[in-house]
Image 1: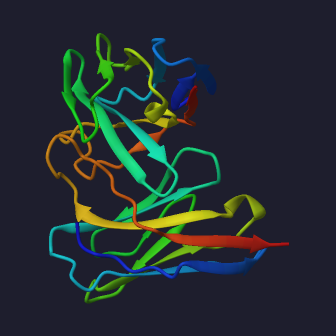
Image 2: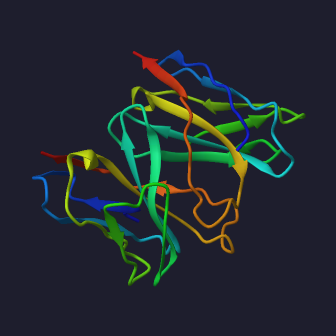
Length: 116
Length: 113
């Protein structure tokens, strides 16, 4: 199993540009989520999905869109990049509550995004 | 989530057991103890979890006291690659559909050669 994979590893954007961060998992996990991690701020939940076709907002959703057309993939779109979106982005996945009630989460290696 | 207290830093000699403590005196009966770690510049990594029994997997052992007010994560033979920040989280297994994970300040474990 590759686990949770993320691409790209690094990205530099100019203000106003858009891009998509890719996340995929091969563990047949129903739950997937996106976090951002800023120095001294801990993890903040951006969006999450409990299954294909279902997404919802987390703590800091503004400026980001997601969709979940397959179980495996959960891309995060930055609509118009801003310097405040400079961060490290992590994707995570987990079994559904029905399958694994304890809900431990598995993270990808992260994408380091800089917006200038 | 129940409040947890961890020492800010610990050192361990390579090859020795690393014992990382966590206090969670306000834990409720339905709350689990989870351990994650984050190696510098990498994604967080799930290690182990438990409710009241001791648990062991290929990465570590988790010892939970009988009153469940504290626990210890044991890495039996620490290597340099185990240098990381270790987070103890106490929460109910199912906390709404968002399942947001919140890391505290954790313990910086440094494995020394």
